[in-house]
Image 1 (cartoon, rainbow over the protein chains, first blue to last red):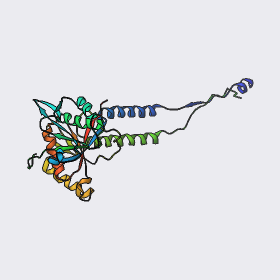
Image 2: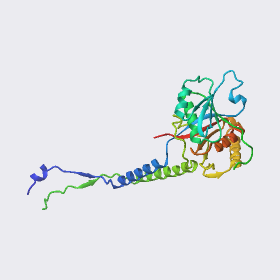
Image 3: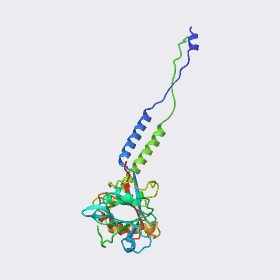
Image 4: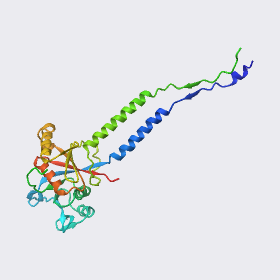
Length: 147
Length: 142
């Protein structure tokens, strides 16, 4: 009879954890995050006041004249006009806006011709330059359903 | 007498993962469903690539209007025209803002290649209805 060996040997207990379910879940989660990462793109926004184009909007009669930027087709190409100065890209507009007084706000008059991306770049330039109030000045439109 | 060595017993830890799997599956279904809703309200629009104002993500978006490249207006996955847009905005002002149009917030998700004439037309319509402020959606560059 061999009792000695039985008492000296440690009683080993193996704990087995079935991980296959967890792996399934992790793969599903991984798949989900990969799919949604492609679908959603980070978005932000640029706030703007609204004003119909009028003499007040252009600041002709105001003591505190707001800065006015016109977005339009200038000499056949999209551009920004501020007074007599013409800018062809948002970076140069931003540089010019940096030098201006910011208290009276910025009015952006949007004419026909340029694409929306070009218009929005002007709003971004105004915001980046530090204007608290940027106003979208919209020209009068013909009434009608307009589809 | 049988004095054979005791076999070490394999003891499996009794952790039941079934409820956790159930919960995770429910979460996945929930997120997939909400993602589907998000896609419904946010049409596939190539937004202008700008940084935006930053830090506005938690703000309530208000009414969301998608403007496609070809000038089509889409709200809640429905293609509408200016007449219907006016009706929806009027209803929204009446229901959510106690007829105070100036309190109305509209988020315009306009395609970057949309001609500004059409953008002006939409903005003019909103301005004539008394909407005091719009927000132009941008796609944050990566």
